[in-house]
Amino acid sequence: MYTNRVTSLLFAGLLLTACADSTSDQATTTSGDPRAMQVAAIWRADLDSLASRVEQLDSALAAMSSPASIAQARAVFVDARRAFKHAELGLEYYAATSTREMNGPALPEVEENDGPEAVFAPTGFQVIEEGLFGDEPLAERDALVQETRTLRQILARVQTLMRTQVVTDDRVWDAIKLEIARIVSLGITGFDSPVAGLSLAEADDALEGVARSLTPYRTSASAWGTLDSALTDARVMLRTTTDRESFDHFTFIVDHANPLARAVRAVRTSLGIGTPIERRAFRMDAVTLFDSAAFDLLAFAPLDAKMATAAQVELGRRLFHDTRLSGDDRRACSTCHLPEKAFTDGLKVNRSRGGAPLARNTPTVINSGLQLGVFSDLRTTYLEDQVTDVVENVDEMHGSLDAIALSLGRDSSLAAQFRMAFFDEPARGDTMVSAARIRTALAAYQRSLTRLDSPVDQALRGNVAVLNDSARIGFNVFVGKGKCATCHFLPLTNGTVPPFYQKSDVEVLGTPVQAVTRRATVDPDVGRYRLSRAAPHKYAFRTPSIRNVALTAPYMHNGVYQTLEQVVDFYNRGGGAGIGITLDNQTLPPDPLNLSATEQRALVVFMRALTDTAGTQRR
Image (cartoon, rainbow, N blue to C red):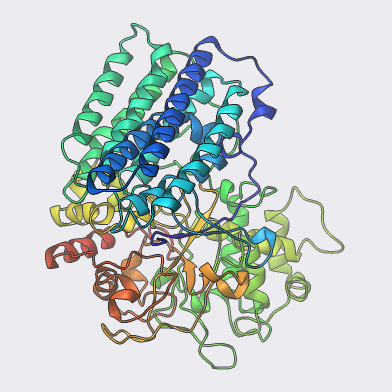
């Protein structure tokens, strides 16, 4: 039943209220606002309705014995999912961990903090969906009943939790903003209804939850007219079709979801309701996920990281090109990450210091600051740790940061640049040059290479003329029929999961050794498994960003594909399963996508329109 995705949880230590199962520490600092308390009552009522629907689902599944009873059970499931979507807004905000248990991907979850092979079975709606809407629901009946009873237990826990929450106005409106972002990045993409295909109808139900949460704040202010129109128009479009393959996702985002988010902000401002004060990847003051400044880079950085200064970035740029960072003074970061090649090298794999092929393809570092988890096996969480790993890796640079710091400290020009970059920090020993500051400067430079102004970005912000018809078709294939956006999440197109961006996905694709279309052999690199030793992670690799992908060939962790057309063909066939590779844990759905030649070409056109390397070429 596990055919969706493997999720590798990489909690960054960001103790955000919205991402824990209790908000009591922050909630008890203020009494509940009267209107927010009304919203909390609405949420609790929706949760009670959900519990009732799940109880009915339990009964319907237990009675399932014929085609008619299967149809009835499916109808009850749809009602239960609708009730969940009505309640989703509050649940995701105040009980995110339990909500993931209720509606997470139908895949085993690896909790690596508990040691090797700490694998937990999935629970919740998506597990039930796979069995109930699969080919043999009667054979799955007992398991489905048991799963539904587990879901009832989770719901009972959440009902108790939600009764204790003190809800405030600013968090209600923050939750509304996040729900619109969730609809765009996870809802309409099919992420949480991969089998039954209920995504568009459920996005409408989620907006019903938004409408209910707005009710206590309603006034006669003119801004409400715009908000009501935007909400109505968005829901009307979602009801025009249940077919995600033909749905115009581009138009929905540009003409409906984004205007709705802006209208929500306008009403919130008119009411004088502020925003919570905390650091989050999707900025508290951003309106949509597609805003030019929607993301806070420091939310993807260590907790003690500070906003880099221009002097630190310039120092990092200089160090990036300095061969003295290697043990033999012959290799710099830019030896493999060439600015003119979007910080890749154009090779299938580069060479080690000894001349042997390295294990994996060189990734771009553009936008590398917009993800949790570095390297294709996610062996480090932050860019600072990546610096240490690469510099001290025997096959790559084989240096010692402490020894390098001593060497660089003897360069008066460079030492002066360190003093300028870190003037507000005390010297450590006799020099301003230290291993920690080398790490900080290099990470600052890489974060400065964030670029989110491609033609696709500009179009999603409203300048639709910059995309031609083929690119727009390709966007809709990417989000719709191609299912690409269920792993390469909008708008960053990497595997760090929106809208909280606190965990990163790995995938098992069945990548071959050679670019063949039948009788293929899986690449022997076991990926994440080498670190976790958890069976679901065998052959699992980080989901990379596909931004600037037109410039970063060859593709995949082993560089097996030379062109985007080959990559699209691989996915269109169902990944490894479609070319003769059998893996029990392949997370990419094995069924062919059946993309037409026109759709495949359009998908490539769209990916090429994700190019933005402005200002990154200077050495």
